[in-house]
Length: 537
Image 1 (cartoon, rainbow, N blue to C red):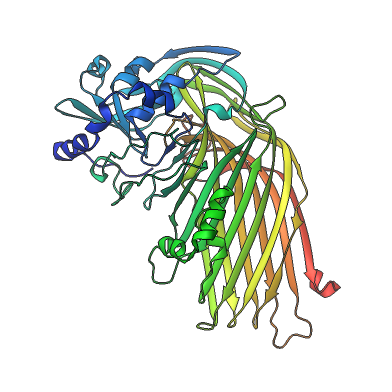
Image 2: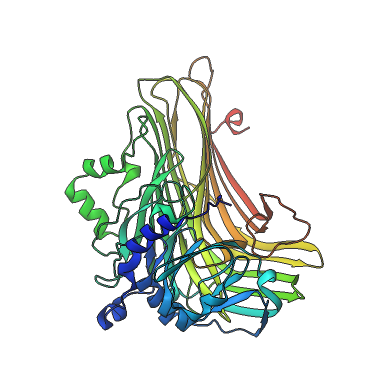
């Protein structure tokens, strides 16, 4: 969890000055045209909060009975629409109008429950003039609910979905908005760095208006890679694209350079096709060149036979008795295309890029008695590389179509993960040239579908994922009787629960920071070139 700092009145004054423009009630025309499918780069602003809450619907439940703990202070839907002025991207800071009556009950240690938005523990309160800043941290559901019996089974409705970003040291920049022209109201006022978690939003510039397209796309940097990610809805299918490229060696952000290099015609073609505008995968470097393109799709959302999510939560006397999540009818495709090469300036490059979390997710809210559950779809990837010899060049690609189900259950002190997924990985175009022994591994978690709590920067409880791993191992051209290249594409699926950020702490998992997961599917294709026995082993 990101470290917190005490916020002074001076910082609050700056915050209030910056967001006060968001407090005005939008005109009827704005309210009608503000899409629920909203991209939220800097958390939620007042106009987005009103739009979301005015359209949000309770999810039908088979069983729904809850008793809130006495320390919970509830801000109902109407009160939140009237008084909540903003939520930062980390989901930790809330700005309310000081006139909101419910705030009189709020104090340090209280649990703040905002209908459809958040359940958080209050760590600090600051008042300045007409505004109150509430600083919070995550809280376990069984601390907020003394009794609960919840059961639901629902399709994932795209009509309620939105795209958001996580708190990140280098935040992404929105490159296109989702919806028809005019469907998204842009709010330039932001909660500035002084209001947020330390380091969560350093020096971010206000976003410029852009022409709306049928997708939401974002660009940014993560651990030495420039990336662009986009989510697009096509009928009942959710399509997601990721392109990433190792940043220039000078350490500067080359996203702007990449755009400048693109011709106007290419940019127009990419935009009209709903593709990624920056085209990072098609732009390499002469020195160290590492590029990655991922395309994915989830099928059958919002229709009969669609992907569904079922869940059961039982809490008795503030103790978790049962947590069950069923991911049903997961179906889709994932493809990976990866390039790694050296130019003429260096002869060796070895590096292990740890897991790179792309801080942009697609979210579908599930609201039960105001409790803000959310289904989150996202990406992660990692790269391991060893290139030996000038002009070494490795390229591989592949795709897999997958379908299946997964379930995770905690009951009677035990965690049980189970499921069944089917798929057949197929390698695509591939090539390898290197004077010395070279290797390349790219692992992409696409998609990761998780169930969490909170509309902004959700705390994930359980998840199902699909991981594609492409790899190349190329022997040395010099000194080898036969130079062999081994290409593999593996497809695996997992289901599990999280131990570190789970809003329902599970006894026995302690404070582990890894995921308690089970592999429910694994398949691999291996191709040796040339197709000799020596190159297959």
